[in-house]
Amino acid sequence: MKLVSSNKVDTNRYELVVEVEGTVFMNAVNRVYKKEVKNINIPGFRKGKAPRAVIEKMYGAGVFYEDAIRDLYPMAVTFGANEAGLDMVRDVPDIDVDKADKDGLVLKMKVTVEPEVTIDGYKGIEFVPMSTDVTEEDIESEVTRVRQRNSRLVDVTDRPAQKDDTVTIDFKGMVDGKAFDGGTAENYNLTLGSGAFIPGFEDAVIGHSVDEEFVIDVTFPDNYQVDDLKGKPAQFEIKMHKIQARELPAFDEEFVKDVSEFDTIDEYKADLKEKIAEDKKKSYDNDKERQVADKLAELIQAEVPEAMYENQIDNIIDEFAMNLRMQGMDIKTYMQYTGLTEDVLRETYHDQAVSQVKVRLALKKIAELEGLTATDEEVENKYDELAKSYKVDVERVKAAFSAKDIKGDIEVAKALEFVKEAAVAAEKKEETAE
Image (cartoon, rainbow, N blue to C red; front, top):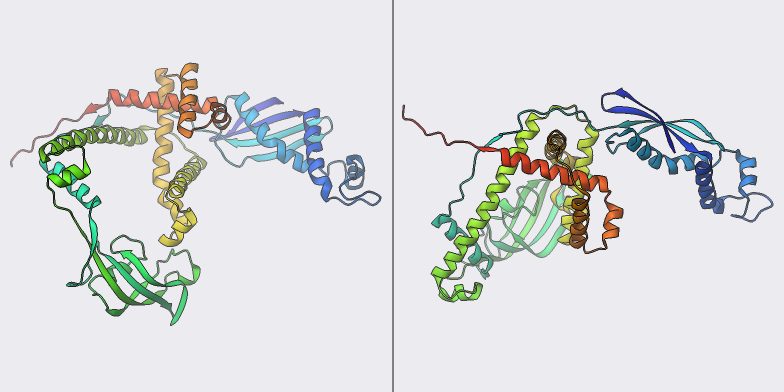
């Protein structure tokens, strides 16, 4: 392949002209022929056995060209961008075919690229430091969380259901007087306040008692995933079978021995204090990083193409879907339970994506300005780290992640550390009496 020309045609848009050798193009045409010939009937030949020359004579010399071009253009556009030294953004390029025959292929492609970035004021960013002091209240809160983890459900018969209770109910939902799919269940366990059901349902169950039968009125959200139910008022007939509340164990030395390696409450609390201090130090660092990142997103000056934001939303949703799969749920089921649509989900993550894209662009520019580069050794170490993390051979990791991307990640991480180290803690302003 050969890059014929590279010209800026608009903000964040370049036109690349790439020439593909005749042999490369004809090899792509032949690959398409071998894949498609099994579906082609030519009189005088068994199905799938007609020679390429015969098919081209009957349907035209370019019968396989379109698919061959579709096969080649991703490679051509990547080649062109690399040769031109452009940081291309994942987007659908505009493609024109200037030439396509046995002598070669010439593609004219308009691509989106990362924006030109300017940034000032990134040294000495001011942040408000979190307190890392461990209070007695912190320790008591952690003790309560541990007791809650070791609690048990006990039947409640002397009061109505309240928030955080787990109730066992039968329910039958109706819209316009008719039952609907998925709206009926028996002996269903529901924790009130969990948000597992549509808004209003769990709140309406609160206040009812065991063996009580009652009807609640709710309205499906306008963005509910089932079109026939969107925004519709519904009635649910409910029978309460059981109410259970969490009973916390007593906090004594027997409890301490059960949940830890210690024998006394004092030893246990001392260990909790040490762990809380470590957590607070991590929280301090994370909060400092968040404040620095927020400031970088404000400082950057760039005309960012929308495609970069959309791509980052894709990445966020992919990561969210992966986390759901690890919990045994797919994203479609999650959206069904929560009433979310894809458009609403994308809108939910839009601001987060905008911030993340701006911060990364800022850090890339800072790495360039400060001469922060990744060595070959650091790239190889990162590959080894990823291979151990994914528990796969390092060659598989190298096939999945380009050295350019790994190098970029390392340089961005170096830039972030540079900015964090240069950040300045804001002085606490003392309040003065009027």
